[in-house]
Length: 165
Image (cartoon, rainbow, N blue to C red; front, side, top):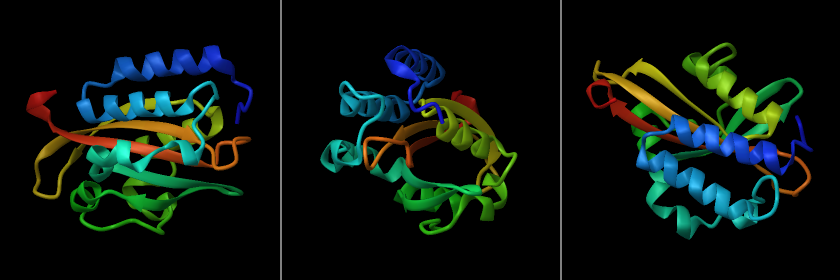
């Protein structure tokens, strides 16, 4: 992890991520994260206010970073994510979920966020639970419980039918 990636690197990463996002939900989460971090490299857990995230909560997940070996354990999943995935992943590790395990686009997004300690954004096409083709637009945002190291990732996902992309 590049704990000293610096303000300029964070600002560049925010601009790059914002340029990859088209969803109002993922943009709003990135803006909230940027405000919450203040003058720090990442927001601390206590600066992410649930009342400001309320409209976004169905689309959010919080993952705990496990470093040895690298994995990501879901601490919280929003109700829209639970419906979209067909189950609640709270308490489950990404390595235990076939479409999120090592080598998948989602795993790469998480591992890049954990390693670089910088915001990331990505899209991935997939077949939904009803057989419809969709695009999942994802923003992955590092944050810290102690202010010293990134130990959690805040994920925002929006699911868009391919015709709208």
